[in-house]
Image (cartoon, rainbow, N blue to C red; front, side, top):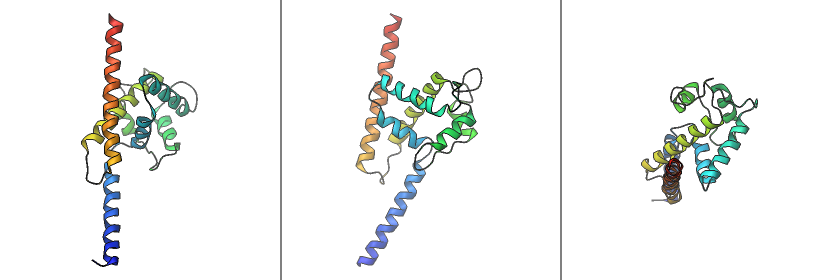
Amino acid sequence: LSASNEMKLAERLKAIQVNELQKQVKNPLDPLLLKLSKDYTNQAGLTEILRDLFKMLDSDNLGGLTSQEFQAAVKKLNFTPRIFLSDSDFIAMTRNGAMCNAHGQLGVEEFEAVMREQMLNYTQSRLSATSEFWNVADQDFTELGTLKQLLMEQLSIRKELEATK
């Protein structure tokens, strides 16, 4: 192959990789979930991060996030690609509103529960969506992230069991 053909082939491969990566973004919150998954080291740390995030998103400081408030707030976060949530995304995240409070909003506890569930779903989907286009660092992170989630769930269950004794 000539140098020109090799460059064209490399460009085509790069375009395919970008296209495949875009297909992997199944949840609009994926960029946020990736950051959250990397930033915590224990349950208390994750709780603190999620509560701080809630305060930042709760722009009117009334202690609850409506679908519209949540959508507008996450759109302002500095992520690439930008996070765009629809009403149907919010409904799906909250299991048709079952995870919302009596006012149909996410309070801080409901927000934390929703985000923990989203993080678990994210790490599980990343683990199962292995692709030849991932680099080793992404694969390693996904496996470690899933193990971290499982460990956190196990610790949470252990604490609940100890509290009932």
